[in-house]
Amino acid sequence: MTVLVIGLWLLHMYLRVLPEAAITLLWIGVTLIIALGAFRRHRVRRAAFLRGYLEPTSVWPRRLRGGPLMALRHLLAGMVLGGLLLIALARISSPEAWAALLVAGFVLVAGDALFTRWLRGHAHPDFAPELARRAALRVAGTLLIAALMVLALQARYPDLTGASLEQAVWFLVQHEGARSLLLETGLQIVAAQDALRLWLGQQWFPQGVQSLPALLGWLLVLVEQAFLAVGFLLLANGLLPLRAVDRSLDDPRNAPVVE
Image (tube, rainbow, N blue to C red; front, side, top):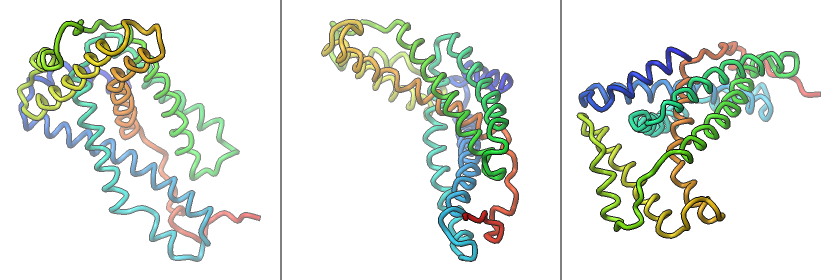
């Protein structure tokens, strides 16, 4: 986890000056890691579902265990999350955010180990690793999103109350630049969305978070933090080893008997 966070910090430092080819390779790499981790965990959940609902002698467990369509689904999701993660990494401006990412990584690893120990003797040994990882991801994700939201609420934002929407968008977009046209386009799109949210929040709602409408308006600004948290944890999930599921998962003759 420490190496991962250090690597992401180095990416943050150099993302804006990397050429187009390097950004594309990074995007492909992050996409494949996220997709691989999600795919292998999905196959475990699918195996548990098929064992519980289908007869062990049926041919459908083998046909529905997960193949190209499942892989394509996670590949597309990985492309979206990978791109959003790279954009979010380039836009991190708070040193505390890196500490939050590091702590969340430690929580993920420790939670995975603790849940694995607690599930021993209770969950099926083939499915316990997936249950433990799923619980650890949810705990770490909740804590990380909460921490990033607190940091975002404490951050300073430009005052756009006297500007038009066009001026607000142009003001934030012109500060986003990168050597890669692909990354620069993504940064400017996110900056334009930030400008729209800030402008609407400052124009339509009272200053601060003293009322429920104002609180809801400002929470829209924090969506990017959730994408950063989810992308980071799914990237870590793809890098962390999940205990290999025995090949008996694919053999319907080894299905548990429900009495």
